[in-house]
Image 1 (cartoon, rainbow, N blue to C red):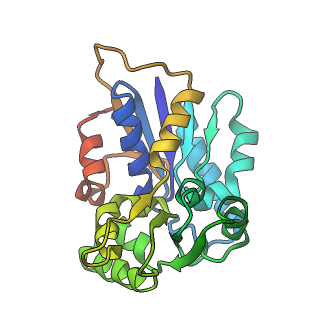
Image 2 (cartoon, rainbow, N blue to C red):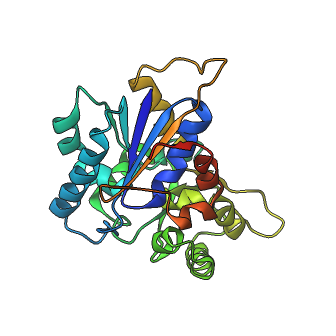
Length: 261
């Protein structure tokens, strides 16, 4: 079995690690676009074009399912990707986990890129799934880029800035960009009030990984696990995992997979 994941950068690591934990025997194809990132500031048609190119590079490797591990690409390119690749390759998009975060009511913050914050897409999800919750949209300029480059100082500054915009009585934070899931613990510490309870953090990686395995027809992991292979594509070129990826536990987990090249 082979699962492909695509994103502009290393935000796909969280979902890839989730697949790895669920099915350690699955081969993985990680296709990203360092030549064209970030995708967020690009026009929708440009995002769709770049996402199609990244998906086509992954499709050459004949995966059993493709995860769009990127909120921006899921918004602007999901219909085009499904039209081109399905039914041969099931395509699974990523949606911010607003529905489960808002289910218990209370104050919910949605951390997202400036392009997504306040967008009709995100406002639509809030109206659909969080009508009973007090929702605050929190723009996080620079955080995805800081995570992409594993810039510790910039990660700290951008998280601190976003936490200052987050209501002090927040009960849950939705991580509305896949890059943010790589620094979940740091975000949790930043939004927790002194002496207060931990804040629940909601990402999408586990849900999309499970959905991809279902769409691929995967059953329970076998008892004897064969060695799995890892293929990394950087704007279509086979390569090793980027050095920045190895700054995160998810990247180190994937590094243990045998390289296919």
